[in-house]
Structures are given as structure tokens and as C-alpha cells.
Image (cartoon, rainbow, N blue to C red):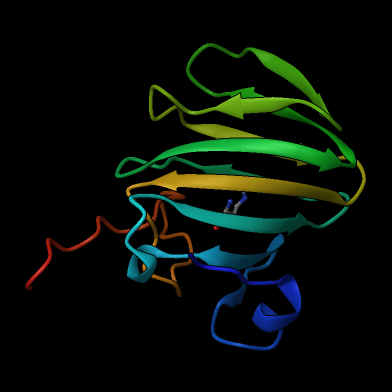
Length: 131
Ligand code: 9YT
């Protein structure tokens, strides 16, 4: 069994910051669970464009308020405490954070650890084991 607390992640290489967010990566590929689990802070007043072409992601909001916009359709969904959105179609999207938001994120396949978004808002594909 793996038991880990946020305190053990803060200030380590598993705490990854970008311009609009800080992702505390609690479980990663090296844990061999088939997914990664992150506790992510989205900064208030920011707009983050993302397009996870190599991953599926579920995002569960535990605090804060904002809107997720699906770029292909123009749909907008209010996101607040208790709401989950799942990018089952690798949807290109923008997260508009009205307040600071705390999100619990699950990625399949799991992140390796240090990933930040590329110019398309994606993370690179995980390399097959053995590479
Ligand atoms: C909500 C969202 O996707 N934010 C970007 C960071 C990402 N979820 C991560 O790496 O934790």
C-alpha cells in the first residue's frame, strides 16, 4: 500500500508550477497504478487553454469557482465545489478561474512527474516501458 500526504510533496520535484497553476502530484507513473493523481491549484483570474491529446483527464473541483469552455462546440459549463468534468474526447478547452480553484485531477496514462504544457496545451505522450 502507498500512503502519502500533501506535506511530503510540497517543495519537491512533484510540486510543479506553471503560469496559471501549481500541480501537486501525489501519485505518478512510477507508482504503477495506471493513473496519476494530482491536487492542483488554479490561480484566481486566470485562463488556461489545454488540449490533452495524449491523455484522458478527470477534474474534480473541491473549492473555488470558474467555467470550463469546450473550444470545438463553444459550450461553457460552470465549475464549482462538487463538480467533475472529464475530457473523454481529448477535448480542447479553456478553464476560466474566477476565484482560486482547487482541483483533484486524474490522468490516464499517468504523468511521469515534471510535465508542463507544451505550446498546444498538451503533455507529451508517455514513453513505453523500457525506453
Ligand atoms: C485543471 C487542469 O487541468 N489544470 C492544469 C494542470 C493539470 N491538471 C495538472 O498537471 O495537474
